[in-house]
Image (cartoon, rainbow, N blue to C red):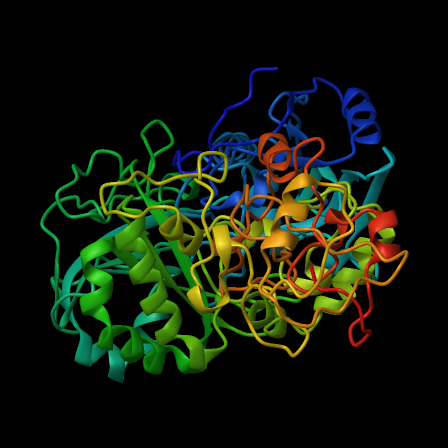
Length: 587
């Protein structure tokens, strides 16, 4: 089927062996039931490998479009691949509306809900809070519906596509309304620190845009449901005299109408029109959620490192999100302030900037957006979600074999704390694979194989150093004659210096040398030899990479020693390996 080979930004090239775009739910059930590894693709507006797989990639865009509003029940039933822009138009014609919208109307309903995407407003939760029921195809091909009120429902909405393929959702709706939008420029940061709560509650939806330069906020976007006209000045900011684009230098035509002109809710709540390219078009994005009481201190922490942020930044945005009860929602059980960053597509510059942001927010229990670029440690992500273990158990019920997980037959967050799909392709791995500022952003499919960057743990050909019997590093001396029937070993035994040698014990086969290094490092992904697992070991090598990691036919296999994966040793060799501390030859 015809499915996009890359994500929307182009920084991720999907490695799937098979692409599917089913036309019916029954066809989708057959695909899921017969797949060993499967991930779901919406509109591709994610900036990491959360939708990537080496198995089957399924797009829900081909499923029958369904928009069934029910004014009496206050709901709408919508197909998973429907975009918010299309849904909003159908709802408005029926006199209904959603409680809020994100900045972009181009994204799909299921994808936005599965990753915790949001709009802005102190009283507005993320888009997933409007979900009343979820219909999905589980790993065994069954069609399951979960309704609000069920014990498993809070873990099945923001689920990152790990429980199955969502086919339909039922959303809460409200009566349609009108919105007016104004833009103010030059809000002093000193006023923002003193009156942050007042500013963010000044309208139904408030967004602050800043380049993290100087002592003023570049733009303040106010979206109000009716009310009087906005004054010419407000808290030291000046009302814009014309339409504005959030990114400096970009034309304002793609943005929704401003200057206080009344309009329908779906024509004002998003920042951008559906018929135009969203945002700047050539970008990467990151976002971090901090508890609202810590907003000012987090702002000061980011302002202290703005010299490292600003060079890679196109524009930053500050929004608010109300708390919810969804297990993996970034706003779970706390009102949040979201610090959003739109980066230039420069891997090296973004790597330093993201590192600076995460270092500055390390003391605020920040939660990254699941679908955007971040490099936080998995254990830090797991610790920030109190219901993480409950989600693991729910995952075991819906997908015990790990079909919808990033790796077949294994759920990485059992050991590594966060869905590996969300952290597999981050700025850290991209920077590790680019040795110069001119190198392009590379996806896992094109990322070069690297050697370990820890020299003190690197031996010949990039392999982890072996230890001798006394625990010393380096290759051990040859301390006896080998009984291997090879001419080269016999010559070496003849040329050995004259000294008392211990002969090999009968029946004990000497150790063999490890194979040539064909990938980055033979440390396993669970215990990498570098703080960044992807700096030494591919997060999920594809078929070509796996073929290159295997030794050639007839090449000696490595011994079962620390630093080598257990699958590299045959069962026969494992039985013949000598135990430490026993006397014998040391070849």
